[in-house]
Length: 417
Image 1: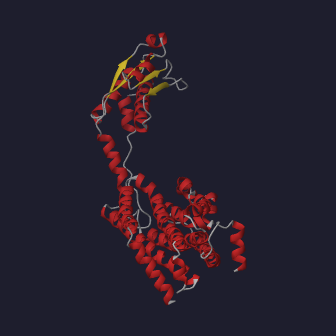
Image 2: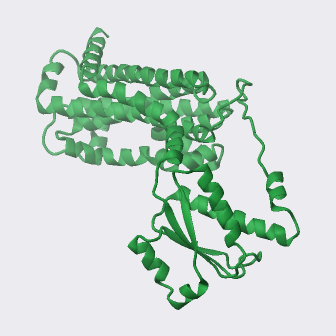
Image 3: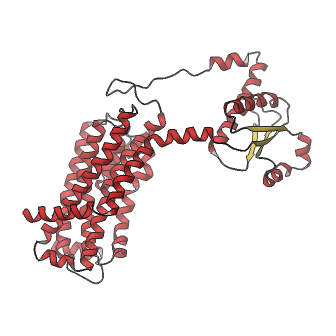
């Protein structure tokens, strides 16, 4: 046991002294803070950004909507004086004579875009509006669509002998205070922060498991290539060396998770977002981090011991990488539907269990306890199997050189050793 501790201490100290570790300690908290508060800053900056006046050509074929649309544009310009629109009414005949006129003016830079209101735009089954712009900025398009719809709605109200201002006043939204069920206190008022919290936890867990475990892979290949591993094996057994390396990097992972999680928790407390970064969610993340890290580290250790060059190891790691990015691909669906059959099925695939479950728990804190216990149990069984297989592969592969083994050869090593 003392030899395992010595190897673990050596691996821990060697890792925390590297520049990469120091950068990760500094950079990841910055990413966490940016994820929590960056959205608000970007949204505020986008509203105050100074932009040139954007010229719009408006063709109102029916002559119904232009004046109301102009009023909406004026209100928008008053709210955002740094991002003004300027509109010009273009006769229908000019467009009918040469349909490419407006497009050419956009290409030449004379116009930002154009809007063509159909003759029957007011009708419920009318043809609507044609819009073209020189860019694809999402927020700008939404604002223009909102102004067009508001203008058409005002015209329809007047035709129905209703006061548009009165109707708009009646439709004014009311403030809604979100409550956190676990604390009984007011929750975060920004829905974007609530929506991004599951992804932030999953990303933190991913970096703490797969990201740190990659260091074990590269270290083994470097030590094997420089023959340092032969010196180490003269003092300790292969199993002791493997166990010490995994434990040492696990301690590095705990340190990083502690720093990253502490920064996130402190930032959430400072800005009254404690309902997003709760002790329950942090505890669940740690519960899944331990077996998740041991599983990934064992698999990478087996691959690292069997390869002599990093490029060979990367080709063998590629299938595992594909599996681990599945939660990244489907995170939106899992966060929106944490109790769906698809989310539940992904929860029982051991390599990605930690990432899927932290998404589900963050999205729904009332995830059934039996699912948490059963997925943790399955994950620990997978860890024991992976460590057992990795120890057998490590014992044979760490002193073998030459062509990397195939999958069938690795299985033969597991059965024979």
